[in-house]
Length: 411
Image 1 (cartoon, rainbow, N blue to C red):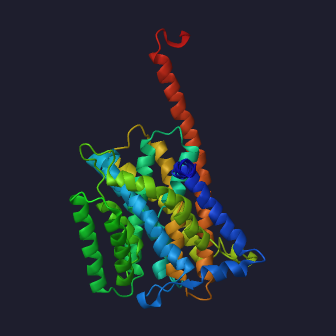
Image 2: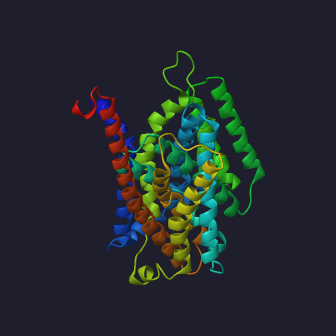
Image 3: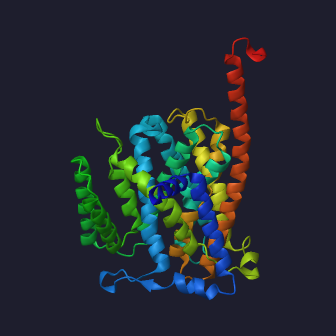
């Protein structure tokens, strides 16, 4: 009886709607807890250190959520991206190029806007990176909830775009927030990745090899001084996603099927729980639209992401460099670009990394509030646009079906 229940729960957690909902609930719980009479318990738990000091892993619970749990999330994202690049929508070179170009626009334009508005503000020499990333889980959750009548190619475009710009954000994290790189540990991570790739090539399937190898890769990346979530992306992209003859499913599909519920139901919500807890005050809220840091985050996300993603996509398509996703129009792509302004997970992570220790700590808090408010605004605007576009696509489908009937409308 236990196994069917577990399978049903896993299937339930695999849906983006559920994953996005759990993410929102976790963020709401964090905000309520951090502003309740027992708020001290929240901050004490988040800052509680655990792990072996000898391995340099005596980290706070919040850091474990950032470095450890998000690595699982990015592993799943890497698997999905690899599958689409090899056997999916992105196997077409020009269609594969579009989300990459769009992601670059969605990173560069917000960064320029944030750097311009926040110029001269302490912490913004690195804080300009806060609005550069799209939250994959949150954005796909909103799309699944309100864009069910939009063609399936919309999900592939948004997923690919979000994975690429999150990957770019992780690279920025590695460059901006790595004070020194331990080359021997970096070499160790490279060796682990090479062994992983070789094992995939040799069709080795035992988890007795892959689980320790993945943990060792993460550990080497962490001790190299590079943000350890990069290990998750790298392992995902090295996993085989094409089925061999006689094989029921590829290793990538099998791993995604098993790990995605863990990522959506545990890893991402726990990260949100420990990243979203901001002690709100009337002073903090009063600064939301006057503080240069919050202004740069809001403008960078809401304006920069939308303009950067849609503008560069429109230009690339018009110039013939890339192709539009199947069955999508420019209005559909604009709605998806608005969802790109949902910068929850990685934006909160960068806010912590860039602004922690600046001043009295209020700068990081105001940046987090700006991320939360802007992400909520983008999700509401994007939902409204997707709902409207869904009605248009549904009407076109109905008209097409009627025209195909013998005798037209009378039939």
